Image (cartoon, rainbow, N blue to C red):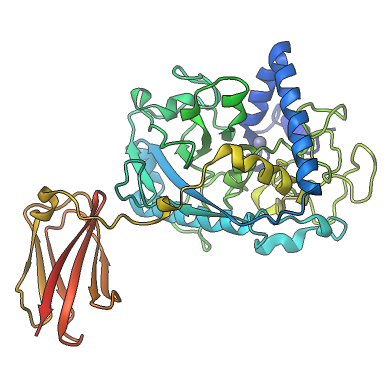
Length: 442
Ligand SMILES: [Zn+2]
């Protein structure tokens, strides 16, 4: 039985679709494609068996599961009118920041709405212990804020297919030749692409590692792609330029897709009936997706009529963002057994580069007067496009002043005349790296 969804599909003959109930995830398309081909299906079923065996071995092991920190790069790939529609660069930054907060709560068992978990499922509430942090180094070692904004000429990307690469899972957004953005080393970074989909019912799609190892698809497509109107969390109270898909405004599409990226299936399995399940030992067997936002104590009978019914409040079902509130412990085990073969930790990615860079950068600006009474001018020959931040530190390395770069600004006036006399360092952080100048305050 397909709760709410089928009812809405039927009602659609008479009335427009209810926005909150039309959500769709590209994982279904991938599975349809795999199940339609006997060879691919056999390969997938073998993959699933092995994943279950790994889970069982992990459950028996006494090894503690340390926290994982995953470096994230967000590729925003939108055209100018889409960028404007969500509040320009500021709107984009708000979405990225709020999305990271949501992920870190959901994957660390810290989401406040976990109070909605019914008593019968509370003992199964799992802590994935995964921390997501924006990358501070690009693959070539230079600095990055952890995102890039690509203004594309494309108004939408074919979410399920593509014309380049694997032609799976929104491949066009992953290549510059088709108006997208190339992945950063997918062995080390979690790449999140944010774009508009041609199919406006599609919320997101994941490309997990097994597509590379088992089906020989290109590794440079690993990651998740998210509908830009489902990315981040809506500001409350609602502000202008905050257009989200109704009900899909709490950042849970990205939580769900990263679940797929780390080896999870939809909670009902791959077939819309009770003939299969998700291969996770503690999620009740469920026939199909649930949608909308069921009342907290709603019980939908599951395939085995066990207590509590279906775990529709799970992140891997299709309910609205405000109603999906948990991963189970069994799902956490699956994510932990999938992680090591998916990403190779590289802690240096989280550190800002500190090395001095090219002479060209060194000569790009003057800091004067020096010595100074504390009122300092920083003059750039031309407004530096890659300047991100200016900081002043004392000889102890303590920050005494900081400001973010302002677009199209060539002159910065800094006042640290209230600080004690002595030696200070003015640091200009460019995307290419940091340049430091010593000044003396007298
Ligand atoms: Zn999904």
